[in-house]
Image (tube, rainbow, N blue to C red):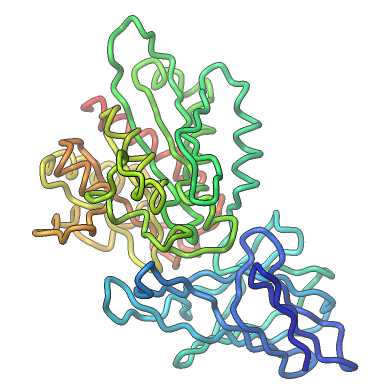
Length: 398
């Protein structure tokens, strides 16, 4: 058996003399660990996962690969190495029977497979490609390239400004899009913040951002633009999004922790956590109503607030009434008590240390009661439109 490995952890395995079927990850957001071809049409593929800078908290949620040469043939892939850790404790596998993968022949139109079978530390999927190149992913990817195309598309709008507020570890641009028609002479505007993609695998948050931005640039949203300034960060970890990462930046730091200890004026902090430092400096200079978006396997919830419990209750109620938000908890989650140094998330830091009404919203990737099906990118974009309307109402005190 012949094993080829590139510097990007690309694995292409072929069984010489038996089959031309191959699996690869040599494309944006592609990710697998070791790949072993068992027969002409069966493979064992490790989920690469990602650990932090201490070698802890490994998460193995993201996989994305291409199958070549298998059109019309049933392929079996056994995903291995699914065990993980969260907050320094053993965690259930992220790849589960209620999280079947998505597949595509063109990376534009994706559909969920009907089934994935999980036993112990392994998950088995079977599919029959209908194209020569066939893509399989945990959930629908949202790449850096897609974001760049989207920003280029909307940049000419009179109501949006694209500002690069920092660079990632690997030197990629960090964008904030400001959308408003508030006149400068009218004084400091009320600001609505939306932060997405702190964790690379959580692609649904980027689709929500895209839906929110597209709505804000319509004629229907003009009244909102005249009253509020919207600042949207669509992707805080572009390095991870490009490389098929999971939760940590390229130096192993969780971009939704360390908000209390990362100092934008400290050169070493800027080197290790440039994304947090740049975002922290930007956001705390322009206070407003703040929401960070996340995905998890199942269940949906909204964080509470240590300083603004009434605003949290209002936001929870409006999300429940006016969007597809399907809460698994009755009311906003109770704020944590003592938080250990270096473990502050962005909303906890802004709420407790900067006095901003700041919140976190988790959306599950499994089937919810409201949608009645596994969420799609179209569902996320639609949610983005409703979400931004709700945030505007809360910011305006309605």
